[in-house]
Length: 160
Ligand code: ZN
Figure 1: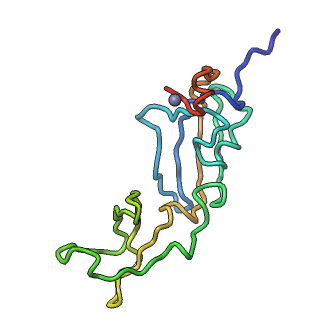
Figure 2 (figure 1 turned 90 degrees about the vertical axis):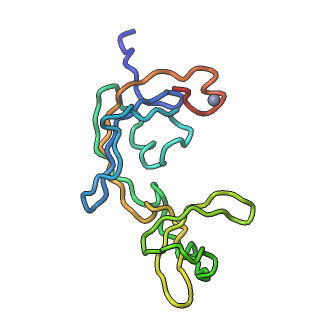
Figure 3 (figure 1 turned 135 degrees about the vertical axis):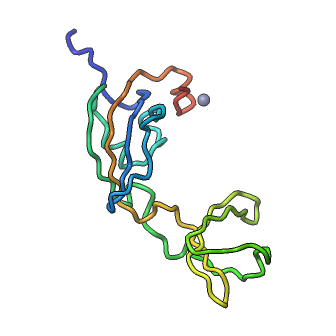
């Protein structure tokens, strides 16, 4: 037995250092200065394009990963826009384009929406994920790897 090197396979708990950049060069998220992102590989705990790309990597290995919208937060859905009347909002609330809103649907579940436009007819809300339609550029480094415990495997997520 000479090959005892751990690599990323399903059932491994991965600690991942990452930096996420958009195609305009803006860094929008990073684990730099924080703890690495920890998850159980193969359970869809992270976006599919990134999970696929790290199979076979070992501790200390680094990689640049480009994730198309379809393997990231999805394409922009034109049906996810909704015009709502002004009187749905408190009269003293100042709305502006790009503003994020926390709302609830009919069954009380929290929803996040962005103001896409304001007109005399109403307020156009965008219910797409803020990163929908974006190509994501990750720089990742495997900070640590360990086999998931039987409890983690049964739950389908890492326990940290
Ligand atoms: Zn659990």
